[in-house]
Image (cartoon, rainbow, N blue to C red; front, side):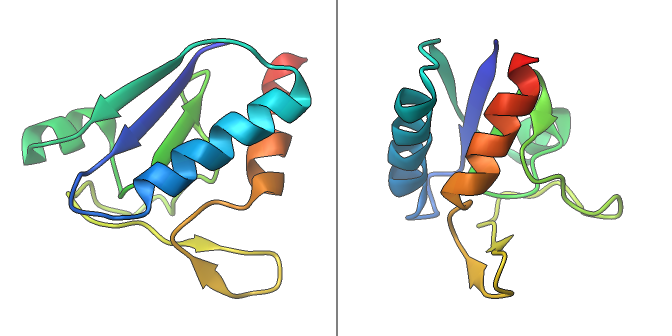
Length: 104
């Protein structure tokens, strides 16, 4: 399994998001390295189709795919939670589901 964690240093939530990713991986028994990638330029953002920080890719797939029309940018990302609220962190359950889907 390949896991990539992309972030923009201008967004403060990436450290908590990385910790959450590691916690969920441990709970799910997933012990693969995480490629941590700092996106620093607009060119890198475009190359990665980076729509905000933090972004987690598992097997190259965004765990919470942004809308098709989303633009690549050096910006902070928000995730919509199951209860409709917005958060700068993906829900643990979103990460868990993506890990389980990739494991099959």
